[in-house]
Image (cartoon, rainbow, N blue to C red; front, side, top):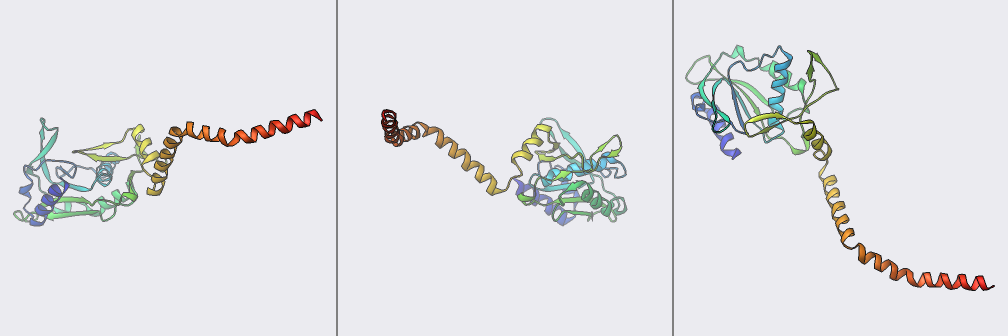
Length: 236
């Protein structure tokens, strides 16, 4: 349940004893990384940061915790925190993180929080925390913009979408992206209209024979009268 994971993470962050993360498994609402997961001076890692953050925003929100060593769980196809990997506050440039997320994710993720927290047992050492709150459904999907190709930023030409699924941040395939754009961005009123249209089509198909019979019944006297008039005129 999302409440269980998110409340557990919030509790650990509040208590500031980050050794409590050890043993916690990644899932749809929690992802952990070592102390230097992104080289923010490279285009590739700026993209990775935008992908990771937007994937949570496109799902149900969650936490990216930076400063934990992870261990692969092959039987569950996920990872768990094996130990802490704490670092100094100076090693976590909050303004740069915020700037890159703002530059590469559209629209803006509401109430996004990027902060460094000191461990209660280790003075001057701590973790980085990126908290992505659940977002209004009407603001989704969150796009990754300024995608990089051959070290060149292609502004306003290419974009991508990633969504958190289980413990992975997977970009959508071109087919999935097309379907999301085609069907997933409509307003609720537009969706209801489409549903009503489909219901009408079903009703029309099911009652087509009755409608045809009624049409013939209504038009039969008119047709007879038209034929009689034609005969009279032809005799003249």
